[in-house]
Image (cartoon, rainbow, N blue to C red):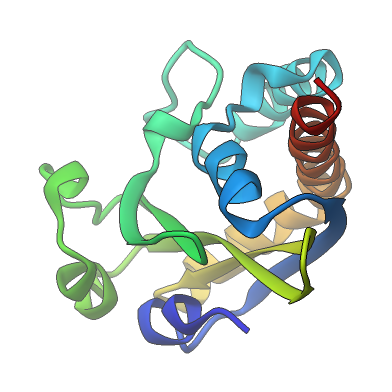
Length: 181
């Protein structure tokens, strides 16, 4: 279980979890998790394009570029075990939210906002055998924001899950390919 998820976002209304088994040392796997990018997979890029079409109906300040890992705030970095990143969106988002500390993120609760934490944590029971876990949690600060996000989530969740699964498969492939070389 991710310690940072429970610390950063103990209360949430939405979550999604995926995991994958990787043949590789935990340190090597962590390096690929740390360096992963949403553009690593053509399918993920196509799904992100579809996501942008839907997201425009729900997100006012959406940029024109595809979402990337750099759009997230790094909240926790505990090599080789865990990385947590976050987003704050909505009408009450602070202007300097990219510079927010993990404590400030945890305590932030303005109306009309959404907080999202995306965590990866690794576990290894046997040498050269690692499990990558990823979980995303979303907290909506008030009922109107919750209802709006619920409509968004119903539409986007299948695509979001596919993007995460493709991302995990990409990390697995890179780790195991390096092992072969």
